[in-house]
Image (cartoon, rainbow over all chains, first blue to last red; front, side, top):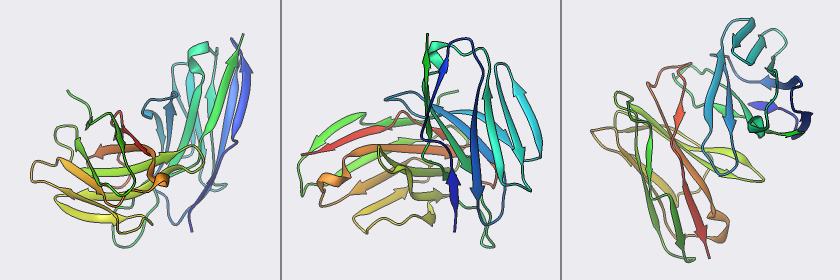
Length: 113
Length: 113
């Protein structure tokens, strides 16, 4: 089966660094995505990892270890506007071709002053 | 270029009625996926259409159906609405090959009373 786990909620202080972890067990692997979703809005794409290692994009970085089925999203210099849900999603594979992304339930991050 | 467009944004329906939601994907994207999002369940995959054919289907009852037109626009229909169908319905488009990023529309908020 497909399973993605991430913490339900996290709280961090403005200006700090926070790491949101995601572990996955899927049939095959075509990459891992992180999305940000503000309350009442649609998810927006943040990052994509398909090879092991760290991908940096401004204040956000995403790490992947395929052998461990593990990823994290690192947010630096937190701002109040970073308060949102962060969704981890994996693109699995199957013999018959493209399969839909499997999403975790999301981590609700609250940034406090 | 224009993003994914969903209509209507908000709607209220009565139990037993049916509803049709519309989605226009990003130009050039041939894959359209539909997701249901509720606070307790997170993002649940409904189905995916590619070149007018349903390519993947989630675990939802037959009351949930969809279709895709030759211009890649898609509609989803829910018949005999139940209170539990109240949710945010998200449409996402992509190029349609494994590992492609999916981009979400703003969603349609459905309330069933």
